[in-house]
Length: 257
Image (cartoon, rainbow, N blue to C red; front, side):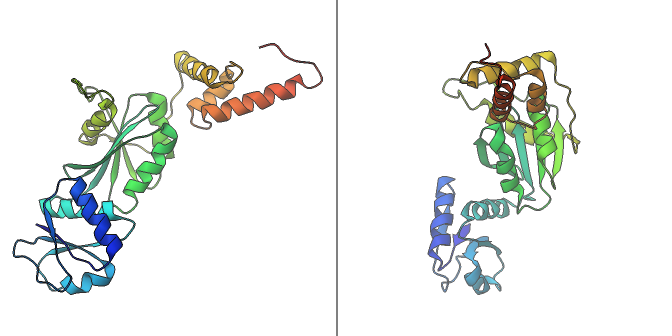
């Protein structure tokens, strides 16, 4: 059983809420109370940790701003898992991202591609020997993720068959569920992924830029290639395109689109 015992209100409040959100059975005691006989894991604060150093239990020290991490560590210890952090990513314009501790999924996200690196790096920051497994579909987006991740083991996974069937009411969950399946598959360790964009992929980027342009203009192929390589976002490419067009039109009157 998990026991929360701390005099730090922030730690107590944060950890208790995290455990309740997960439907975990736990109990709370005062720091000076004796631990229940069924205790296997104690979650406490740094200032209170000494009170449990002689008890034959696993002690998790929680920081006030890292309650979720402490709850995940407690659950991993409770289940006797190795606790290795594995991040699975189903790439795309809004990647599905899951964080697993051993065999258990402890967190899930779906964020814009531009925010994905920050999410992944935050989730592996304090982990021991983490691995990030990225599906090999959505070639341009997966290449961007592979190339921007540093100081962590990255595996490229064959994502064939990882997208599940979605029944009634499960719309919008496909990318996150696919990320769970990707996390469970071993892949090829990679440090970078060089992709030559196809004509069709470049056209998709151009079309996307036209949709976002206030003047209904698409970026040119050179800028589209830079977007494909992850050097620019579509918005940054539009700004360069706009500035270049303005410069070309100086002294020559207005240009037709």
